[in-house]
Length: 363
Image (tube, rainbow, N blue to C red; front, side, top):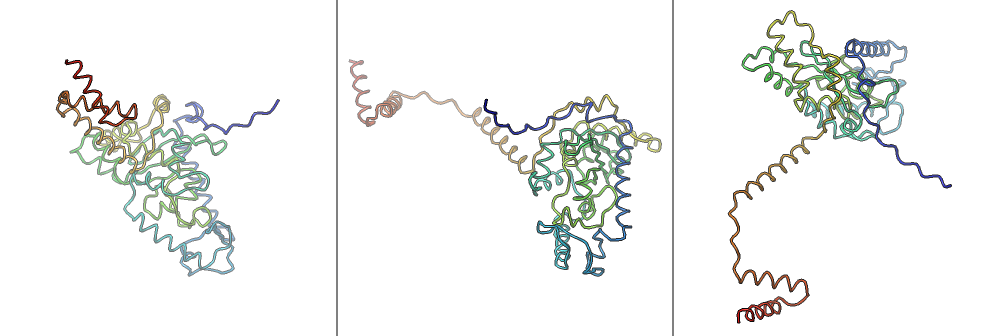
């Protein structure tokens, strides 16, 4: 019996709640433990006998040693860094600063910028977020910092979830603006520039330097140029952050609710407010919600334009006067056209045939 050909693997479904979500209590401690391990690893790299970090002094060329063992993947091949590479890195930094500025970044900008650059063989970070990350659960909020848990996407063994921290620099303004209700202030805050970090390796090695240079890094700063992982300084966020920014940009009710509660508490008893926490039952209920589509600004505008055109067409149909009944001459012309098309004869001949039968019937 011939062996059937193997079918391509289907996309992995999102994991059941109890498998990836885990316990909400202690999740922030887990996030901080991972970030602390990252900080210790970075400090150890600075203390290494042979430097592996391309620091600002070396990048400027003032401390460059031609015998250095630093490498890069600029051009697609791992090789030793040259002075020309340093010049290319400095040029990339100028382009990055021109593209991002220093005024922070909004959730919508993160989504748009994450769809511009392809990761080899994997698509853009926005595509990967839509394909692999299905959940973003706001776990807690305290003094302008939001902790969000996402599923891991199944790419790293033994890692079920990731932690994204989002910091809102305009938190104090939202609390003090009593002309807005807490819900209105929460909506306003979600639309403002923000900062973020994720505990995943892609954020650590690809994007932390970019976030630091752009002024929207929420964790430890990174001054070492990503000469191996991201020498062209492309993209701004990992797939976990993109999923979180999608919910923030959509003013998701779960995110609005936890921030509204935090603003209410801060306005009532600011000094006694420790942390607004999502319960385990709430988180599990939220995790059952279907993933929201991730769309670029261009796609959203196309949908809005199409909706406006359809609405205008419906309005025009409702307001148009009913068609007037056609007279004998008009109906004769229509019949002649139909007969000529069906039997392949000239319209004039079809008209004479119709007129013959009309006269005969009248006679």
